Image: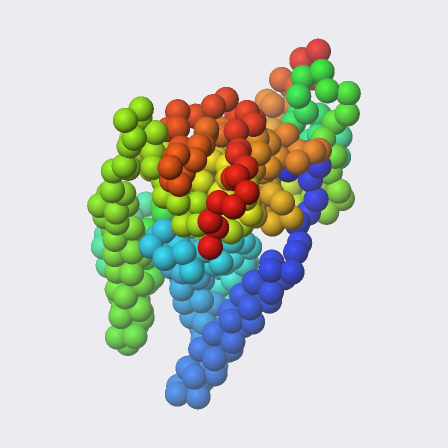
Length: 75
Length: 352
Ligand code: FES
């Protein structure tokens, strides 16, 4: 495989994983991750806000995943 | 201002700002293309695309330059603060303009059936050691990636999620992106273009960014005269009337922290000059609807105790104030965030 194809595949896989993680994050987890521990209500997001957050969540998905997991572990 | 997130907190000022921004960008791009087109009519499709590549490319470069100049300009003269407000929208628009520039470049290759040469051009590692012949497009792509990251994380959510120091560090990458763009333009022109116009633009823009930053730093070092202290170490601010109503005067504590002393009619209160949102200069804001309002993105705090009005939860450090012999004085030691500390001037204190 040439270096170009490897690069292309790496970018494509990272991007696809990012879209999947990002979409799941903005739909179910964004509010939870930001609320104070023990808060009864997650922080609220409008649909537009979720959409605007998606590209960043997709780009930074490994870190997003890490924070998501940390939030799930919190009581 | 952190209880819920919306896409954009629109207000009239932001709409006007964005409208002017978009109109100015469109006029520049159309004007540039029209002038080049008339002076040098393109002979074929790649030439025509090239005109647009330059129009969008120079627009993105000029926009980045302006964005970087706004910070020091606002520090040098408060009239530029209006430009600082909403600078994030400016950044996002710059990213889109740069994207079109990149997309046009791909079209340019496609129009010549040369798309397959693009990747090898970028991946020939030996060329990265050359000066003339350097794959300057790679610099443009790297800068575009940074702009994407900044645009994608420009929403307030990211500030809260990444924490302000990380967010700020991430957004300082703009300087790296600018350096890459400068090299991208410089190396690109050296390979293709002989017109003196673009090198001149490059030198003027880069010079302006560097000079304004140096000037702002110099001003800050030399402009902050030491405060006048009373015998017990409080800072003398001046008579109450020296503070414009519904605005502030900024004083500098001996340690260098800036304190914003606000007046709302006969109420005087002192808060840290750093906004809890992104360290915006609160003392350059005004009192709107009874609250100290940050000039950058409009976060609000009560003058009495530095707390954001419910349901928001931000709190600022406050400072004790007193009136002594007709002069306002501020204790330079901050109180814990949210401590009530404002005073009401006695009836009859001269305010005009
Ligand atoms: S810095 Fe953003 S509102 Fe003050």
